[in-house]
Length: 238
Ligand SMILES: [Zn+2]
Ligand SMILES: [Zn+2]
Image (cartoon, rainbow, N blue to C red; front, side, top):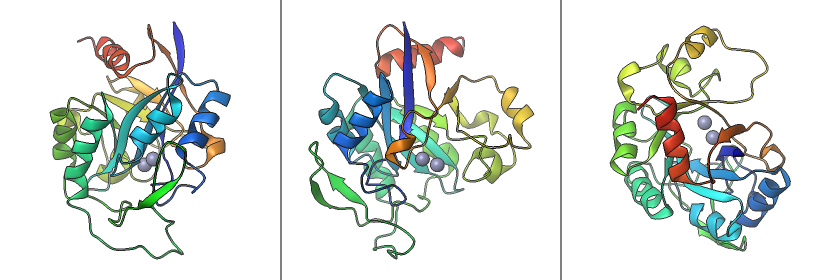
């Protein structure tokens, strides 16, 4: 069965995302885009993931995730089997972030929402900053909670392993790499093509209209985290 998946979508919790990215609005946009599987990945937090899962019900399937910004400012997409694991991993990341309200001119509010889209409050840690975990520790943290660690938007010129480190850290333990939509291929495209890791395409949506604009077609029996894990393991030959 071929399924359409967009595994990197921010919600209104991310300071750089549109406040209209509420749980029901994300679900509606995902359905309109024909997506079977999505993942909610806010910066350094998973606090809205369960609300999106409740808003979606059975369709599309929603994976709880987050996008961790490592100490080197490398973005890592972390996907988990359930929201509880995602929230426990996020708690360790959040603990290392500075408190304080960012200047409203540069960053938006960090809204905590329920499944209906009602605002429950604001996160006061600065989610848009680097956490204290270096890249290796970030991947280890994700694996400690049995998650998948995906090198985010490796073809982008900022906040990617290549832009921050100058090359791909072969020993970092990533499970997959993610491509984002780019206008021009990066100078390290040949290195990306040479990587022996599964490749996912995701939108990294910060606005509703971006959801599903760049997505992966995956061969899975049914949309689920375990199905994704099996697929990734199969593609890695393990
Ligand atoms: Zn990112
Ligand atoms: Zn992102």
